[in-house]
Image (cartoon, rainbow, N blue to C red; front, top):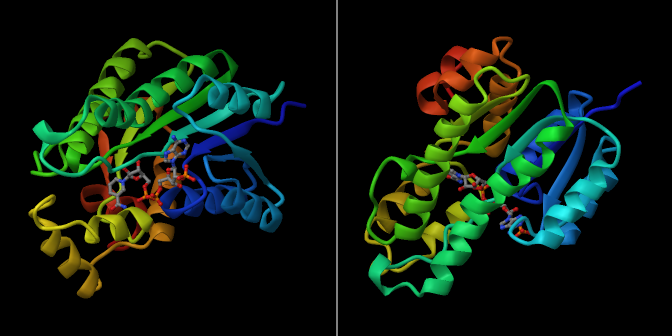
Amino acid sequence: MDNPVSIITGAGTGIGRALAVKLANSHHNVIAVGRRAEPLAELATQHSHIQACPADVSTPAGLEAIETAVADRSVRYVVHNAGVLEPVGPLLEQSADALRQSLAINVEAPLALSARLRPRMMSGGRILHISSGAAHRALPGWGAYCLSKAALHMAYQVIAAELADSHIAIGSLRPGVVDTPMQALIRAQSVEDFPAVESFRAMKAQGDLTDAQTVAVFIEAVLSLPDAQAFSAKEWDIRVDGEALLGYPP
Ligand SMILES: NC(=O)c1ccc[n+]([C@@H]2O[C@H](COP(=O)([O-])OP(=O)(O)OC[C@H]3O[C@@H](n4cnc5c(N)ncnc54)[C@H](OP(=O)(O)O)[C@@H]3O)[C@@H](O)[C@H]2O)c1
């Protein structure tokens, strides 16, 4: 009998970690990907449905390691959650190398991994891009992040059109402002590099961040939508769609 697996990148911390646990608790077999081995090993020790796969998604060796971890199984879900905020600061002051690294992780890696895994995806399989409000809004200091997330959003739109008659579907999802290590990094920025930093510090102080577990419930609900066309038709936003899908305000 086939024993499909689901792949979550960036699963060692934050949203990816919470999603790995959520899917494992729903009896999915999960391959948890990230560069740091320790948090993944800890996850795998705690959950028998989770397999640790230390890999850098921006390298050929990392993609190879993920494919090796899949082995001869089919793939149900691929959640492209790994992402980096940096470099932070005025866009025209960033080095070409720093911009390339951001694009390599936030854009090229999801495309390369989807291309590689597509032949292994089961009928009804789903790819999900973890997007951001930054894909749609220009934020001074977040140039690299904004342009990489905007490119990822366009990639979702193009691939959705290309896969329209396919046995698999692609979606995109905005998780809101979530209490994760990435938010801690955001709050640690200087006002010079990131002028809006105070508003993020205030959100944390006022308890306005969504917890990663709630986001994981939302992501699982979107992945499980019965209608593949509905899954692909729009970018799911926890702030807009959360209450309808979760049954309570997120
Ligand atoms: N938190 C928010 O408010 C928020 C809002 C909108 C969108 N998002 C998006 O949500 C996703 C998850 O972010 P998060 O908030 O949960 O932050 P996070 O805890 O920093 O998660 C990012 C994860 O990506 C992994 N990663 C980074 N580069 C990688 C690479 N080259 N290869 C493999 N794994 C890599 C990191 O682990 P390693 O360093 O060990 O590799 C880390 O576990 C990101 O795409 C982010 O842009 C977050």
